[in-house]
Length: 313
Image 1 (cartoon, one colour):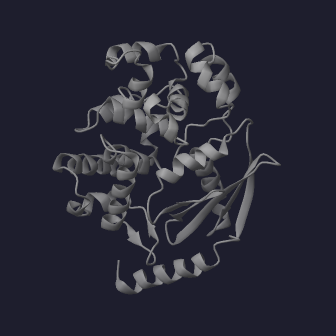
Image 2: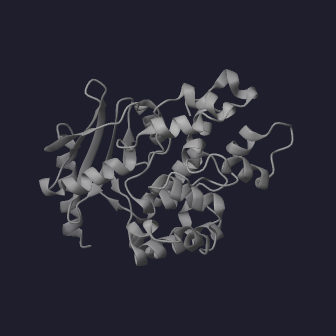
Image 3: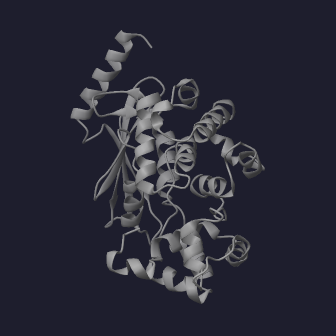
């Protein structure tokens, strides 16, 4: 991209940023009740990509692109009307895409009542479910973003993964202003030098491989048949990573991050950690809603030693 066009994009976004609210186009999406908006925000806030996403106590916003210019997407929740209030800049004709992405992130059309009724048949899990009605499995603006986060987040904390996402954006993304960026496309990640991420070379290789996979197959590729097997065939992607990606991006509520440490801790009845096979057997009883079993356990389980320091997540 030449310097003149880059300057034009930056100026365009800076003008847009000054008139963040109200954005020129808006609409409401009805939400199936119950709906735990606070948990969605809490989950997304910890994972907000620096420079791309902003999550406050009342709403979510981020940079997006319409293919030609940078734009803004923002969402709040009106509990009186039980609707998501979605606003965006750019071409009004982009509404169908914006609406689809809003549903992809916040799952307003998912009816959790039958899911919760099913999971509540288990006495132990039902204790979490009864206290946490309306939980959604949070999605994301793009499958590629979630997939990259899953890889960068392997075996590290959530805040550490968020830091790495910010580094990736600065290494491969498009800068819009001093603080705002567009998340890089798969093609940009393939072409970028990522040595500054400070992660093992093997993980960088996996990020590059994943980016090449999305560059070739598109962001909708995760809806294809046998996609889990295709992900597992990529070097550096195991069952936890594939499960996490599909849990947050798929329409199937049965994917889950196999072998997840928090899940293992939660289901361990003794000091010894539950075996992977036993964890999988335990989770089999919650099929076809293992994604929601996961999110309820992540939200509700607090190790005894941390009870006094309970996190909202």
